[in-house]
Image 1 (tube, rainbow, N blue to C red):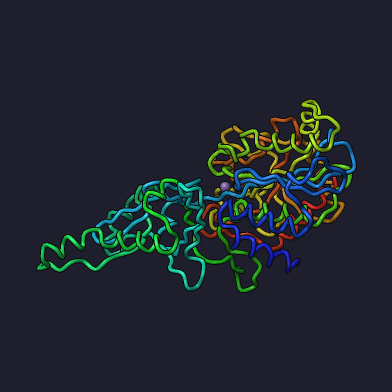
Image 2: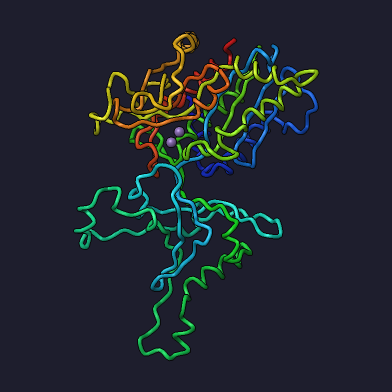
Length: 449
Ligand code: MN
Ligand code: MN
């Protein structure tokens, strides 16, 4: 067991609970290994290590290999956004002495899982004067936390008859931010007037004092609500990790660690960490945009004497990629959802997924068997354990990754990641052995010729 890797992983989860925090953390770790911002380079040669960021929410790291860039790269591609709740743009309201923060959920969640948990707020408030205010409330022991309340069982007779998707509606997933003592019935007119929205006023006053922000500044804020607290060992034997955002930061971290601990051979190595996968890879920081192509063109422009679009196209088409994303671990408590022979199990090593998609592989890029064979040989050569997996039984559901966006360029792509139990829940479960195996497997992949 690579204990250091696991400790570093848990720290990474704690320090990166949003895509922005992940980008910061990735850059910090990369800089410590000699990576520099691409703007510092006019040209690139073998052994140079650079990173390129996009809007502080996506980042790619490259280590230049000895061969021609035209022959393609070895790419580990993960995503760093995770399911969560986002504050709306006019979020604060008071209802009967309790102040709430109105949210809209991000990604696929089971809404009822987000009630009665300690929650933290992470994000950024951008003020009109151009200044940025970073916000993290709920992670320090001394911090307050936030919570979404639920109905007591005594009064839940109607609620428990409902479908799970209706236990709590998306619109009702609002955080308790504060409260005030109700005004007495016999209070004077002035006292009643004074008590109006007293709780909300206090919340705004506290925000103003601590962060210098006004209510209207929520208009230009990006505040993400995540489970409060650190990643921890799970089980008496400490064989697993319980943590938020392991889809897909388990793969982002191991991809990063593999790159940082490798030396590029002939091919240029790349670790790509993108945003927005959980909502379809849309937007300027998502894989469906031209983000990656643009990043690679910056590399091509610096490795070649003169930039050529053809070189860029060839580089992309000749690349190998592992789409580093998590797989649904076989769940003994819900065995009927899986075809056990074709499911990933906790502790079974890297989960390779030939195809994603649903209903007849719809939406899948479906990896080529020639490429899978090459990857199998590379894994066997270093004794890394792996399993061929799918995401649940045929027609049970399904899901996608960034693989098909990369496949657009004509490169070989295979989904390869960590098996996760309770995926997309506030606290997800991974197996430490899988994290260690995948780190070794990714390192072997980066040596592919
Ligand atoms: Mn994922
Ligand atoms: Mn996901």
